[in-house]
Length: 290
Image (tube, rainbow, N blue to C red; front, side, top):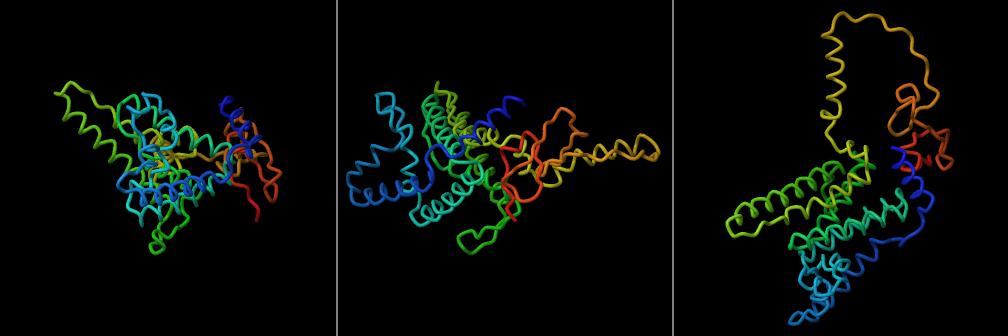
């Protein structure tokens, strides 16, 4: 807990370091590579130099570890790919505004690097699809009940999109596992099913306890209902003595010094009003300006 708080404090202190508007550059890079691909369809030089290839990386072309996200548009359907890039740009920009430039850069580049390394070790292909889609998980944590217009037509809650993204990740993992079992007799043990899970586990690392906000309300409230049911089954309910009022209450998670005596609390100078936050959220929350 203390180590995580120190990391959050460091990231908050240096939140403006790094590459601002990172997803804008990723989108522009994809568009440039796609236009060059259209002009060189018979010999797509730039695409062949930038896409991920484990053999080429092992032969010294290490830049492919970082450049494969730039071929996302080439490897997808052009129209849907363009819409997806616009949506990922919006997600990335929003996350960068809330997390800070440094935190978002570490998350995106970390996902790109770890996905490539896992693909390299497992001798499989590194897709940027799962990395870009994982941005939806971050947005769903920030605003789970906010609506977005899917394809500018269909209103969908962010948490619903997050569940679809998790389903897509699960599908990719299960498909990889099926392929592994099908090829067991060939003497080659396939571990490429790990690649879709890399951005998901990195998201869990960055989101921490807030990742639980993606769970359906029924699952999040199940422990509280179970605790209440145990109290009911234990015997008649007795009058409860008046409880002392808490002096500090976290605006995000609602914890107080009474529920967590060892927890430290601070007030945010950038939020409007007298807003109190616990040590887990003082450097990791959306500032309230209205």
